Length: 262
Image (tube, rainbow, N blue to C red; front, side, top):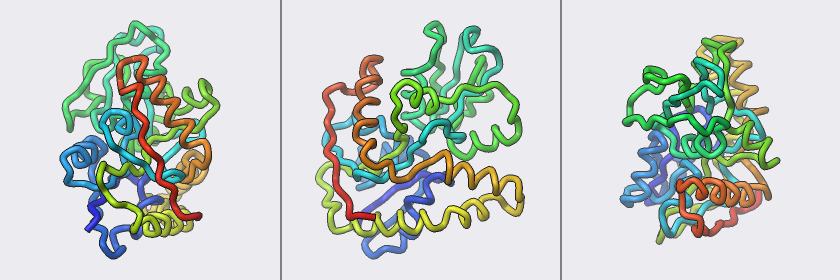
């Protein structure tokens, strides 16, 4: 049995749709920090999880060509501002995603800002801070409630800095796991997800047409789930930039696993 973990957010469904129905695969959904823990303790074999983890623990591989990525601005990862960026003294980091934390630390434009680490389950919006990082469906809800609140978008900043898409979450394979017999299952899930974006947005919108349109734009226009040949370049550029700040191992070189053509 291959034990697979994926994120509990809408953005994961285009990559794991139907995966739990495949023979020999057990699929669970957890926040990224718990998925990382599962990979490290061996309770998970594969996880759709924070890309920074590729460069923090030895022996990983990743499925080349599939992952949660953003062309530029992605609405589900946002830094919401209570004051202008140059006046932000404290920024509360969402504890759910290590990649979003590392990306924000790497590219945040105010060098005097203090980053606040929170405990799992704590709400960054409730912290005593001038800004807060929010990820996943909670970030989408915050954006829908307050569309005019000033914000800074990490993945848009990444695009401006590198001209590459940002890879938020690849499928990471832990050391010693024989993934090859299951590659077709991951390909089929991605194919199913690509054909179901409208249905996924409809299901998540709970009968609200404006929200359905917003979510469909998010899945179809902001995100990409097949980053293509830029995937490796973006991942290793992230490693290089994050390692300068001591956020990962500069020498880590996780191996790509080719998947069958989609």
